[in-house]
Image 1: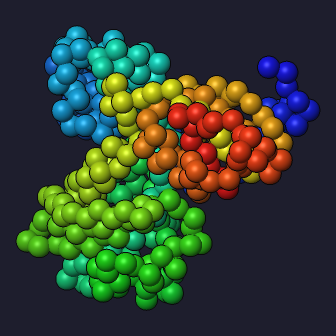
Image 2 (image 1 turned 180 degrees about the vertical axis):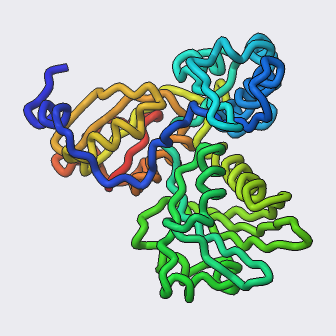
Length: 341
């Protein structure tokens, strides 16, 4: 295909549109606690690290047990690029390409590194009262560690006085958190997570609610410590989100995606969002771009929704204002999905 001058400019642009979905850094690095550097314990820790990674990439707690992974379960080191000890922690870096190929070869579908950004309103209650976790607080360390462990891009509020007045147990318990949503706009996150964690007899229990678009999830998680509870909450959140973005084997098909309103930065954003679907650019016409992808329509809608795109109904007027009238327009392909900013 001959590239037009605008497309050449697009391809060379270094601009990027402020994105809601975020690529998770360190997705293939797992930190596993150890008590020694003995070979037997290292082998056990590598096995646990592999289990954590597979769950992080698939959102499926049973994925590690598929028959195609029997070899790497016995010898996880064949997927490891390096490991080092940092105090009482074994830091394991898995090779992304080798790992992905092995998991896909075992029939598993993977969740890409581009994941919904989640703003967390975490209200902690104990004998000293209620406190809202803020971005710069040391008390938020367990939550950041849990986010890394579960592969989720989190954001925390500043927890200034105004936000502390909003983050009350009553507001965090609402089915439609209008006050929280208003306070969250400044952070431009994809999802909103409200958590009430309280301590009882040395243990922690957390009630959580998650909103992403028009959908809502909720649950209860617990643990023997703040760290364990934070990890349990984010594991549950990850497992609720993953099915929206992971396509089961055989569910993907060849689709055409047509997007109206593309500019330099938006082209770069689209390219990044569609990368997990083996996207190939097929046409550029003005500010309208068309891609060929291999995905399910549900996953594609979820992924593009992260960038704020809205779907154009199949029976709507053509996106191209100069297109032929409906009587003379060519038939719309059955596999075409249309979106617009």
